[in-house]
Length: 364
Image 1: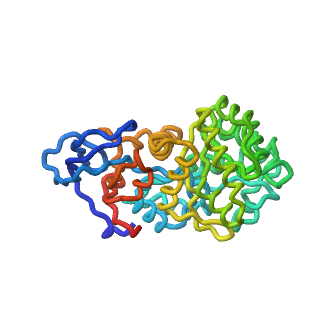
Image 2: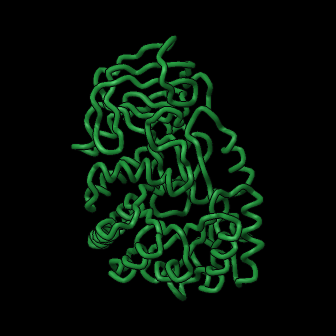
């Protein structure tokens, strides 16, 4: 990140600020930013009057695909202070992005694991990521663990559509779990969802576009403790571009059913700039659209905020963020308006801090 584009003060006290505490907005109070964390003592701080604005924990986008340092800065400018990358390759590109500071913090799956016949196998640079039989799984997972992957991503397809077969997928899950790594499965069809549940993945990203998820699969998601990242922004874009609005209605219905059943829903936009992908949600702004679509699907605004703060922090083992409390990472978003009554107010950003570093504002 360009060091002249951010502002850093060792200690700031935000006064007259209402804090979203996970349930409601508090009465006006003072929040201290001390270095990279939230402090308690305002002594010696630079005082900043927030004028009664609402302070949110930094937002977490649970599904993005990195595209250079500029993608990090764009995320940060729109209040996304942590991003969970679901596939970036080659490894050296990801390693360089991990070294960026003063901007959005990242976790990543690194290189995904793909089948030989699916669309993902055709993407440039993924020839070595193809799994053809279960005996390859342990080495492939070990390679990703050695490269620093925070979790493993496997691209599942409906049976016969060219994704990893059931035995190979199951071997990937077993190898990842043996190393303490969670497994995230790409699944955009009911058939792929069925495989994901059969092999015991931890997270399923996307929702089926070919049919609503069955009541039995919703039940299995809950019973198996599986987490959903629906990426409604991506599904809306795909359906709009193909002029098939009824398909997106099914996606909304599936998310509503998952939420009503108690399945954890995380907000992920699938923001990307990958050539060959049929829709490219924009970094930063797309997460705000995702929150709006989650509310359309049946989540309350509070639920939607949890989907972009406490829940991804908890399920992806990030205990230092997602909340505003002493000792937590100073990832903060100051907004004008009340997201608890109108979720679109998350777009009305006035200031953002990533680990205590204030970010430059981006045009809306």
